[in-house]
Image (tube, rainbow, N blue to C red; front, side, top):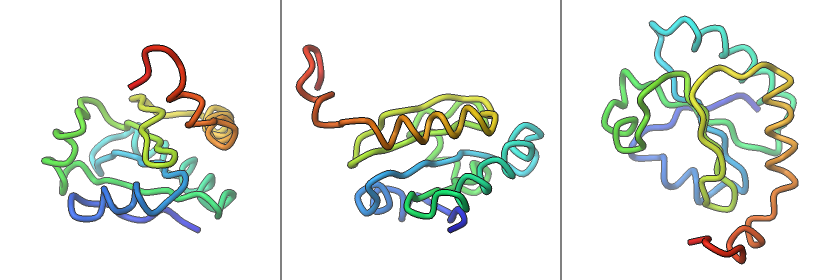
Length: 118
């Protein structure tokens, strides 16, 4: 599977629909975004059981602003509807693979039981 475009109208539905959803916030003019794109697409192809979405911040500025995106690329990850990772900056292939492994192993219900969890 390759990544798919997300916008304001599809963002929440994608979070609800997919067990694990990674979202890349990018723009065409952004050099680091263009460098990260092949890494992201390769990960999407290597992990067809996960969902990989992309938000073009130029065409979806209100969505990016609502989510607090101040630097691109920014990668967010959701598991079982919960935001579990958000970080600006391009990841290396090894870092992205490590993140994916961590997402697979993450027990979201255990997070909710920890003191101070919302």
